[in-house]
Length: 133
Length: 133
DNA sequence: ATACAATTGAGACAATGATACAATTAGTTC
DNA sequence: GAACTAATTGTATCATTGTCTCAATTGTAT
Image (tube, rainbow over all chains, first blue to last red; front, side, top):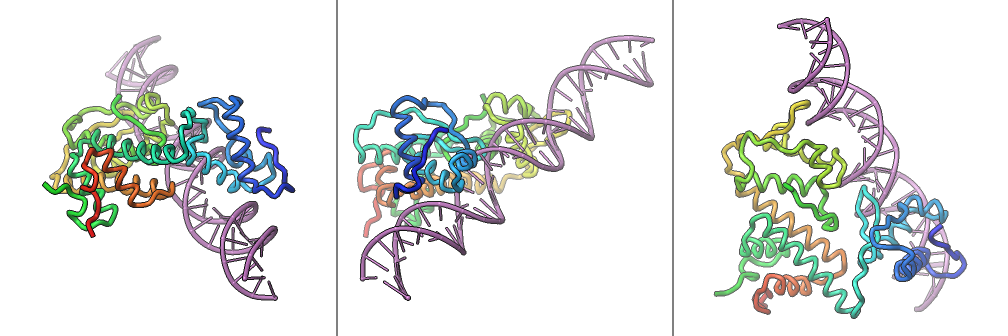
């Protein structure tokens, strides 16, 4: 049993799960690549609804602690050194953006096409996102 | 390795396979008559279940991009008049862009942050991507 | 009490995986 | 060459896993 709950503590269950998994990752008890129990398995163990576990996993995923993959499972990620909360947040968005652009370019799209597509997706008027030159 | 996967992108694996093969066919990297790897071979390469590859092949088959033949293999088909080629290509990029933005927003980023991050990633001067109003 | 927000639960859904199956091909034996 | 067997290929079905939407519950403030 990876996680132990205190139903009387007042701390939300999902929050307890998040905290304990973070703790274990920080302490090295869970290493990158390790697979966590499925949401349903952990939910059964803890006698809790699987959505509650899913919520915890989602938070951990967004925090970059784990990677949840539909149909595959959830895995511990490499833990980057935490420099700063704001930096982390921004860095994650930058990573996301860079992955998107790298992928688009790998597929053969030109910068201009990418910009146009983003303009459309963002609902911005044509030209508003274009470089003026 | 014909196809490259990003397990963290949120885009389904089968969808990534479909998109990349389409792209390669469109770009001429795969020509009519070329045989694709077997579902099991590609699955092994990508460390994925072969049914996931089979699903991608099935979609491509239904779209007329390839011909899958039980017991024989899968082959690139002659591409019919590609008036849609441009549309398909553009649609693909739009899907990618929308997925990226949806993901970013799901993670709680504001439009402005997203735009800023994209500007940085694209190496565009600050402000060039901003809406002027 | 009422209203509100947060938490948890229920059920349907989408993506992936495991297993068994069918069609084709390639050898092997006669 | 025909018949059989084994290997290889895609197919079909169902189980498993995470996701989404919305309802029920709980706690708290008004």
